[in-house]
Length: 361
Image 1: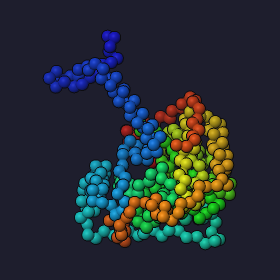
Image 2: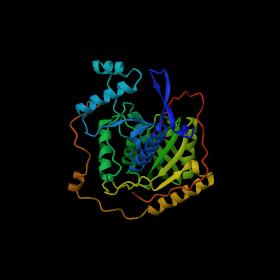
Image 3: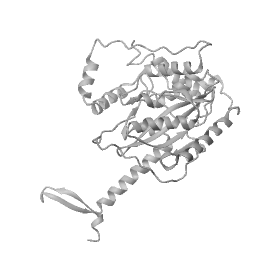
Image 4: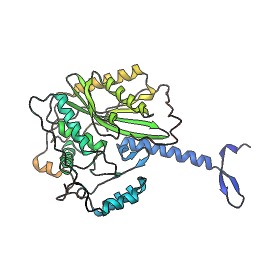
């Protein structure tokens, strides 16, 4: 049959079998294609962090304290995504003797504290906030906002001491390293693939004294903090790539931004994606050259004058959304990009004994 390729089946109760439906396979292909296009659109818009292996999560857009609608939506989402979510939610919400959660102290440093020690203390603080598993991100991070507004949100994170996700950790890391002029910071994001889904993650790359490292938040211990000991950006990226392989993930893309200003009142935007590298299409040597080129680009930015800071009144108008006196949860206690060239794709197949289980990172 000439049109057999365009036939697929649907179950007919009356016939007790599957009947062909002309053109349905083409429709399915079109649907898959549109999903892939949407995936790329989300990447371009910088909204890939709103999904976790194809599983969406909510963002609290109403500020703090969390409004009633957002609060209830969060618990409904927990009931859907957690194996015992509904029962767990009732137990927590109905409890009257929940233990007080300790509020971590923002790290302070002595003049004699070395840069690596300061970075470790900052990472310890970020880790103590804990990873947010609720399915609702408490702080809204718009990548297009000026740096001064994002720093206001970072201050709010230290006040509220709520669990955070990876993008929030990057903003918090920038805030906590602003008073370290010898440390340069830059966004470093990853797109990986496992068992038919794409996963997105971001950390804050750091560079000081000729060495690279990273700060961040992740479910996985080896996908966030990296000590300041990597000689090149290539070494740092390869360290993350090795960690992804340990979870049967194939690293597809790496996106690297420019150095971020140390001026907390700067009105410039963070440059999130100065270079976009298709890791699975590049040889090791090509990847090394691209990363070396990006390192040179970042060095060239040092010393360039930043835009003037806004007046006090203007800074006030740029701040984070208005917040109330407390939180109901824890307070109780497009720029230039350099796409990589097309090379043969080396596909790493996931382990066959995973049975479809999604290993999120």
